Length: 73
Image (tube, rainbow, N blue to C red):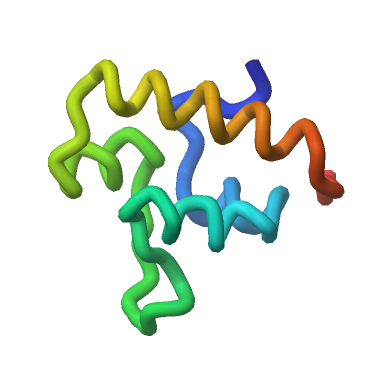
């Protein structure tokens, strides 16, 4: 798994810019809404009321998503 719950939102969107829309589609608004979210992906998901199972599901989908998009290293 490339992305884990401990990744910061900043690092995630820097390495994978396409994830901004993915996060927004999953209820985690970042950068586009004018209120940048900092902290980890897990912290942002918990703040939005995600359960542990929902976070795991989102991570699975997110890793599948990024396996199909360009990446910045």
